[in-house]
Length: 121
Image (cartoon, rainbow, N blue to C red; front, side):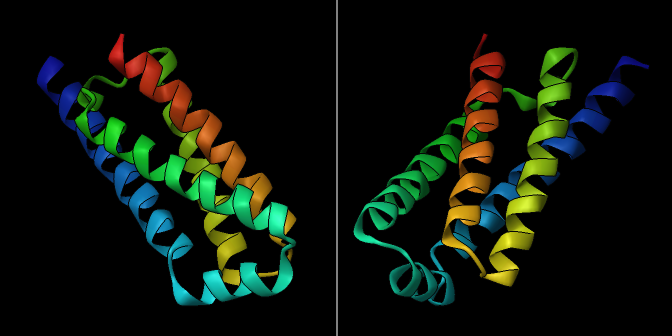
C-alpha cells in the first residue's frame, strides 16, 4: 500500500513540475516578451525579468528535491501551487494586464519557494 501512495505522489509531482516548466517556457515566449515590453513600464519590466529568473531557479530546486514523498503540508502546498500555476497559465493565454501577470507570477513564486523549503526538510 505504501508503494501505491508513493507512486500516486510521484505522478502528482511530475504533473506539477511539468506545469511549472510549461509556464516557465511561456514566460520566455516571444508573445509574452513583446506584451510585457509594450505594456509595462521599466520597473514592471525589471520585476517581470527578475521573477522569471527566480521561477527558473525554483523549478531547478524543485526538480532536485524529493517530491515523490508529497504528504501532509507538502501535499497541500503542491495543490495550491498547481492551482496558482493554472491561473497564471490562463493569464498568459489572455495577455491582458501585465500587473495581473506579475501578481499571478508572485503567487506561483511564493508557493514554489514554500514547497521547496518543505521538500528540502
